[in-house]
Amino acid sequence: MIWVFSTLFVVYVICMLILVFGFKKVPLFSEKVAKRTTGFSIVIPFRNEAENLSKLLETIEGLHYPSNMFEIIFVNDASEDTSEQIISEATVKSKLSINLIQNRRRTFSPKKDAITEAVKHANFEWIATTDADCELPKSWLTTLDGFIKKNKPMMVCGPVLYKSNGSFIENFQQLDALSLQAVTIGSIGYKNILLSNGANLTYKKEAFIKVNGFKGNDHIGSGDDIFLMEKIKQTFPKKVLYLKSKDAIVITKPQKNWKAVLNQRIRWASKISKQQNKISYFLGMLVFLVNISVLALPFLMIFDSENTTIYIALLGFKIITDYIVLLQSGDFFDIKISFWKFIRQPFLYAIVIVAVVVGSLDGTYLWKGRTFKKAQQTN
Image 1 (cartoon, rainbow, N blue to C red):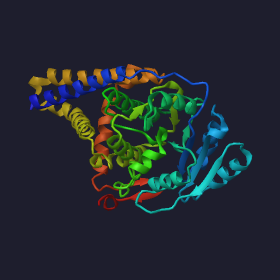
Image 2 (image 1 turned 45 degrees about the vertical axis):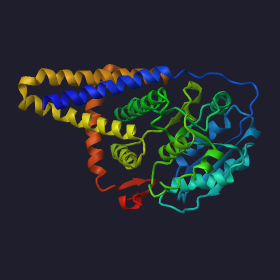
Image 3 (image 1 turned 90 degrees about the horizontal axis):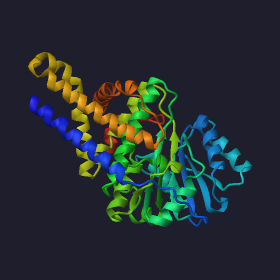
Image 4 (image 1 turned 180 degrees about the vertical axis):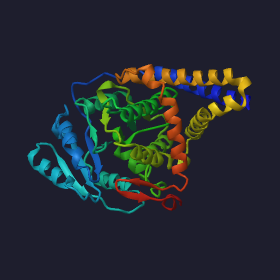
């Protein structure tokens, strides 16, 4: 048994260190071009986001980019609050091109339907997606413009940071998000990006049409970012890039309670088995097994006490490795990570992982007031 656990933890540490080196290989991008030439259609699906839209609209108004070079397309997905009214009023007051359209449901995935509908109305060649609970940096489009001109990509995955007021639950979500960003940036260092986030995702309209949009995975409720990224990467090898720039960091809101946190993670877990990238699946299983092992270690120390020192050492190596990964990611996002606050993270994360696995056994989760079931996610 000790050899099984030792091997598992060693493989985990090696994989995380590989991602650390991959992270270092991705250079910071800060170049900007005087003349803006890239046109953007910013697509924002929404459902019952009245409490968030005012802040989002404020940051949209603050974008430093020629107003004739971008448009905003809001897609209303059957909102039942005042979201539509807020956007309609903003459309009248703003000098920007703000369009409000209605979602046309065709599949089991409302968000994918919304993006598909928006692409049909898009007037520019680049589609930039974000979420209604996000805040956009002033230099977002300017930085994207410079990056696109220099690198000629078909898709650009951008950085996303969770807000945190310092509370335990929000700090957990921010650190968790930093670890996902570490995997994303670390993998792009080896020209094989594994993750993407729809809160900051930009791609050519041509690429979306070429891969038939979300066809083939529109029976899965979530995954508009990951599945589209995988399809474009397969069709346009080496043309899916990551924009590692502090000027392009999109801020998003954390979940308010642990029930919402778990439900969000169950939704994310629902798409893992559907991913085509074997490395993503391997890392997902590795992280799951290691975290299950973390919870098992106290029992192993009791029933296999002669190897207690080894078990403690394995746990110590994991904690130190995770801290190194988060320190690196936190440095990019200008987030200081206290080791004494972090020390609780591995144990809490392990508990969350178990809860998510148990909760996802029937494949059912809530999203925007709707229930999605496993039966809707099979061909």
